[in-house]
Length: 60
Image (cartoon, rainbow, N blue to C red; front, side):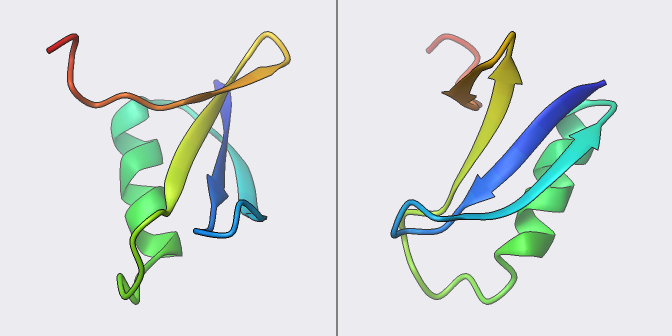
């Protein structure tokens, strides 16, 4: 299980949750920013104490 957090466009953490899979984390992220009215929302994952942006480009 990994810890994920959602940041709003202003950089404020609005939610944090431990989630089993990246797919589940993405679904949770979409639910957290349901109004979808602003650009700049982001999902980060905790990598051994360092928060990192979740990249969905699969290396491309």
